[in-house]
Image (cartoon, rainbow, N blue to C red; front, side, top):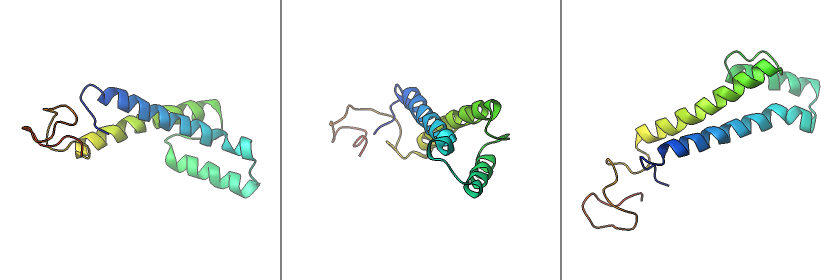
Length: 108
């Protein structure tokens, strides 16, 4: 998948939303599955390690973690773009499928 300048913002928002959705699923997972005391304590400790200011399974921690998850999604796409993983070598000078023209192959 290419990250065109026009779709970068859209992709970043989609990945941020994906991370946010996964966060919601993981946050409510103990209630869905039911964990014993040891696993619940481990789950809480992992949340405290992963998210700044996470104090427990309350509304403030939920909102803070959801925002952080979304922001981490935006950061991940930004790092992906900066690292040049997709379409390395500058910008797009050609449309998809037009190999052999100036600028090299796009999005191989």
